[in-house]
Length: 352
Image 1 (cartoon, rainbow, N blue to C red):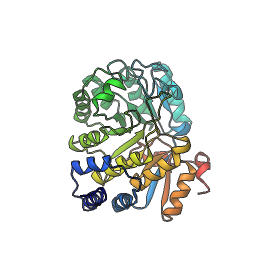
Image 2: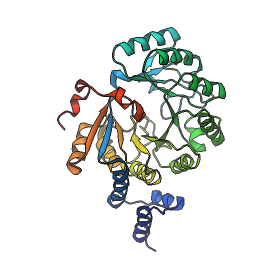
Image 3: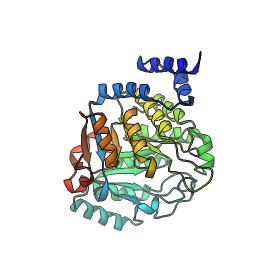
């Protein structure tokens, strides 16, 4: 069978919802430029389950990211090396955190992402801040999203006691990335155990999958998706981010086709699960192509898209409806009413 016929046969399986993991793997490996037939299938699946709607998230000042470690991280991952921490608000003291959150709530804040650099064991040292979060949750309606990294039972228990709303957890089933990109002396089983631990406490886990983290190439992203499917997680939302290559020769920007292949396959595997294109992704000259193809591949959420992308989407799909929220894209549906945007926050989109 020639390549064209094999691709068409796999697409027919996608359309009939009878594709195997081997089919998905083969499709990823095919080198071809035209995904329009694939996009027809993914759009059909999305429309059947999520109507003609795209949710847009603009966190801004009402949903800031806080680093509890400042700019410090013990891992110095190849793709980050602490640069993302520099864009967060540094708060390394419980009293300062409590004061900030009380004022944030008074000033119309919606919530926060509490994050930070990792310790050498892959954990974010969040435990000592959770008593403060617990007090804040009793006094306010602020939505708390937490990056935990790998964690222990004590931290998981404290997260549920503090009523943390969202656990944004990076799912990675690639041992080479764990060793060579994250610089972690951990095994795949450690990630599986962390997910099982979070599940055992019935926390709201939002899996995050980074596309192209292996130097800009696709490499075992499908293993992560398969794990999410077979782990019993049943997530209401999956967030995809994509490598922003550091200034190192061995890294490249993942292509929009590779990104949309992974997103589209996930849409087929998880037809009723919300899928978002998160904030960490290539911008500059690749931005609009990545955003548009991701939409075609089946996302129904996106954080901080280009206005030009939304104009293109509107032109291709004139019936599309845009809904805006002042929050990160992991916002639970039950909290959407708390995160309605003000017009001043979405000026760039008002003419679409």
